[in-house]
Length: 508
Image (cartoon, rainbow, N blue to C red; front, side, top):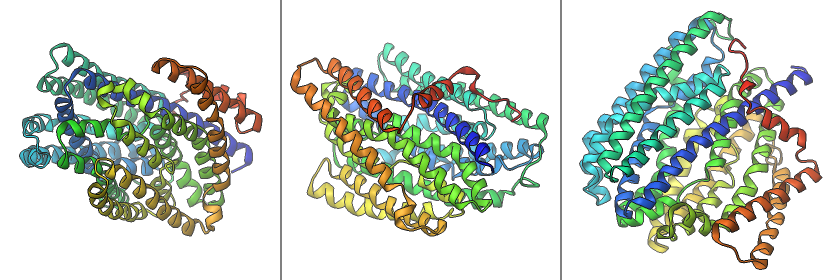
């Protein structure tokens, strides 16, 4: 690949990544708004019951997907168009089968889950909501089918619409009295609309592929066994990863009251902007990582990965620092003073986000290390289980959050060791250490302006957050610009990529 074509490819991938990030952020903000609304209108024990049912469904849906969404992304861009229709259809059937198994498991285990949480009120809600996984299963295929086909703008519209429908369901339920049965009924209605839209989008993608009829790198679609050979290692890794992600909340649910669980759950969150940017960049780059590695361009894989990690760091480090400084103001503003205790959990969780500049598993799968994410998840789970058990006894309420941080850092070291061996580079080359340290130093130094602001004036919380955020963003961007880390051309390109006309021709 020539330098000019590589630059063009990188620019397109960057635009798609940003557009996908914006759509996913909008979707996550809708979920956050739902949590805000319910936190402010429901008693903590009722809100805690909602969060427990939501947590169980969300976690098990991702577990029973069995890694199939990633296998779609892995194969679809390389298949000839004539094979894509049947590959998409088969993938949707497999996802729906897993979703049905999820719903059945939740339905049958509802009483046991309620007993484990010490909250009998959630048993009928779990049984009622058990159909939800089936309603959103096709959406798991939509995401990667549209990404592989270059229809990112269409995916963004779908994601925003589906999340907004859930938010609207929550708002209507509150207007009708805030009963959880009503709330979950309305969310199921939103899910029915989502599955309808998802199936229409999948049908359109399959028809577009038939019309284009382009050749691919592969001569035929993979068998079910071949698809699961790619999917299962990642799927099992996702299962262990979800347990890792929710373990601290599960332990809090079984050790404290429902109201205390609600306070912990509101603090135990990642900043929506960050996780979304990371997932979007990794998702869009996955096909390119795969192509370059199979072409023997290991240096090109490493360069593209380093550039993406540092780009994410430019955005992520200032955001982490700002929210760490103003954690209490943010939590109270979002969820009310009732949840002030959540701020310390939020600050601890921010530390866990520092090494999450990329999806390490995506790169590992792309370079042929499909089992490494699974082994890494086992490493994290081992650390997490031991530390959760010890720290909740030694420290109490915040112990599980600290365990989550330590597990996050530990598994990052493991992933980097696998990447280093595969790409045949040393520890000094496997990660852009110096560039990231420099970015972190700049973001930290710029935060001194926040200290000066707080000492100079006394402002209401929401005003202080707004003024501090604008000032900090201006200082950071100015320093980035002065040091040549970003340019106004980059900013204009980012804004242009969000325009409705950015989506390429479907036949590309």
